[in-house]
Amino acid sequence: MFGMESELAVSGSFANGAVVPRDMLARWLMRMGSETLPHLQGFDDNGIFLANGARFYVDAGFHPEMTTPECTNPWDVVRYQLAGEAILNRLATLTVERHDAFRDVLLFKSNVDYQSGTTWGCHESYLCHNEPAFFHQQLLPHLVTRSIYTGAGGLVPAVAGIEFALTPRAWFITTEVSSNSTDMRPLLHLRDDPLNRSCSRLHLICGDNARAHLATWLRFGTTALVVAMIDAGLQAGEGLQLRQPVKAMRRVAADTSLRMCLPLLVGRAMTALDVQRLYLERAEAHLRDAFMPPWAPEVCNRWRQTLDALEASPEQCARSLDWAMKLELFRGRLSRHGYSLTQLAACNRSLARLAGQARRAAQLRAGHAELRTLDQTQQMREELRRLVDECGSERTALRKLLDVKDELLEIDARFSQLGDESLFARLERSGELRHQLPGVDNIEHAMEHPPLLGRARVRGELIRRLSGDPNHRAGWQCVIHRDGRYVDLEEPFTDAEVWSETGRPGWLPDEPLAMRRLRRRALTGTPPDLLQRILDGTRL
Amino acid sequence: MNTRQRPRSTPARMPAGSDSADSDVLQEARAALEGLARAGQDAIDQALSQNSQQFLASNRQQGGQ
Image (cartoon, rainbow over all chains, first blue to last red; front, side, top):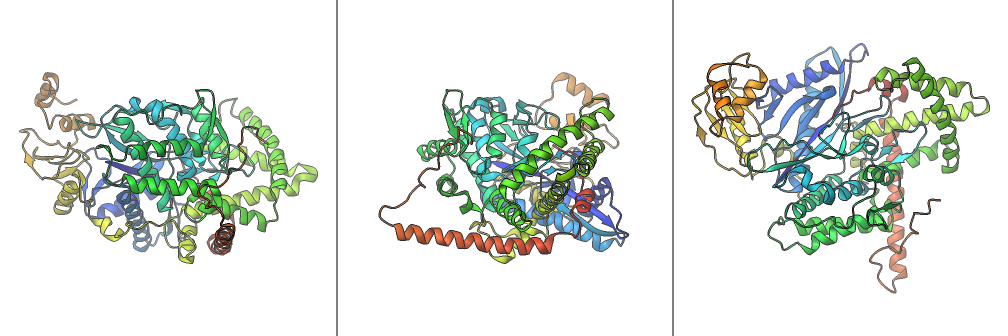
């Protein structure tokens, strides 16, 4: 069982053209969702749960976040991801239609803002029996190398010039393992938040928001199989451990030829393609094992087809994978502006030199502190433009390159934009793309109905029936009434709506969140003495 | 040139003795790429604003997870 959480970028303008503050946009979208969608308020006051079993809330940095419900196959993940996009896009449209003050509200399924040097995530969760740290050695090589088909494509954020990246997010992954998800983003997230009492949850934050259905389908299909093998005790990544995984991820991301060799701990080097082929072969060798899902053979077939196509020529995937599509778009645009690769390389070197000077100047102003604030990043960009203007004979060429880079960044953003006006939607209408998969359909149905299997179905049906009732709240593990009656959804594959009593209130008005969480944890078992005393008599 | 890069290998699954079939496949792939390139530039022309710098400035985001 697995699922996805997508943080999106949002922006908008008032009727007079002024930019709408993003916190206001996020609040309006949440308000529109509460007014128009069947839902129950989240138990932790954290967003709303929808009738298809998903959750919509506003995450750090005012990023609207839409999850999928818990899914049991990769087709459902793609379907519910598309359903979530359609829901959010509808909320954005309604916000503009119902309020004259807004001119537009735009949502972007991206992960990086190159102007401010910030990132946000597209996370994935996998049900498993072992704790997250168990997966460290065997899973990391897969996470580093799967970018060759999961990458969203874009530019390398860390450079002033124009260099393509299979996944720009790679430059924000700074450590192998960590429990942190904002300051030291890891390849493997160790946060232990199981969402049920009998299993663990493997939570990964290193992936990209992708538009191509094939990219998301492969991301979840392949990773689910690798996780299943490791969880079953197999050494799925044996001999593939990378010498410096974080650095390797950036090397993979910077190499559009897919020929870069990555040093391994065992002393030899392999390409990302070779690493992926070994994981695939190991999955194929265990297709008949009891722990493998029934769709494993189809995932392996497409996995192999995609690796073959990438190895023959990455251009073969230009109609089916995000990064390859964007690379073609960027190349075409650069060619229209008269740039060859040689000219680009020379300009990139000059800009790198000037960017170093701009960074030092901005750091002096910031008192040598690290440039972290949005204003400081903006100052550095302005300083760079000023240095370019003072450049003498190179000035025109460098200024033009910076303008072209802005154009490529807008292309990147428009590609990720939701709605019919986006670049991706226009490409789809042209009939030139080949990313779609048989079986990813019925999106309208998925907007309002949960998957057929698992606790999401029970949650979704309850929410449909109880929608808008302030006396009920929902969570991943339960639906609860104010008087303490609840439906236990701890077991991931529960399929029955069974109401139980606690004899204690579900929650109290104005109760601290910590107290409310204690009540939820106490729902399905006898609380320890201390907890019982807290719940019986006192508030925190 | 990075010495760690492998030379381009023979594409997988090339059937023996089928040069004309290979040529057809390559031609098809090239035609598909040209189609995408044309559609892509048309789509970009329609989707881009008049001022990319202004568009990007108005879309600045804070960091998330």
